[in-house]
Image (cartoon, rainbow, N blue to C red; front, side, top):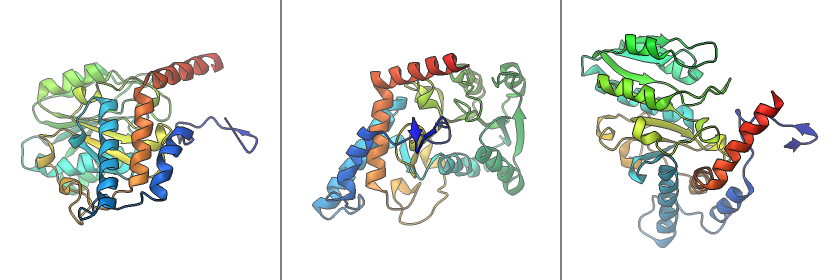
Length: 281
């Protein structure tokens, strides 16, 4: 697309807001502006229903249930909640190693450093090949019953490499470790309809799939949530895992974008993008 005469190709940084998504959001900037946590009046109920519907749409995108979706400010916060949120559970166990792919997003690598310095976990970086694909032999050689968690992104934000998440999941699952997948870039690049079957924790970002900026989500398996600690304290919203008043308009936009990504139109858009990439190269 063109912006002020400039051809914009940096969709891995952020996507333009889809016009259909914007149309879905608009009413929640106007007459449907209620606080979704206000449970004593109809305005709050309507906002809450809209947020719940958005959670359902996002859950459908990755094959999860709505109560497993925790809204965040974006994928960075989702990554923090996933890894730091489970850290105390790791401290209580004998599993003190965490494996990260060497090409994870900077925020995941920074969280790894914090887990090492502040919590004493042993952080190991798994190698990738010349195309950015995770070395699965290295993963199999590194995995053991002392590994607490493995984090591998679905689609790389710099070079676009799509990882074999299903196979990685089988290797990690066999060891009893948790598997986290940063899937911020994934919905625009790959089929994510069964991602919740393969990962225990999945980070998502709205603005990487033609939704609004400032909103993301963490999928956390239902049975994992009681083991997690919040990284933001406050009024106890979202089962106490992420406090703060949810922005109904942004949630609605995120849900609408997820619906498009999960539709046949989303499949067509991914194929069209791949064709354009191949033609350009």
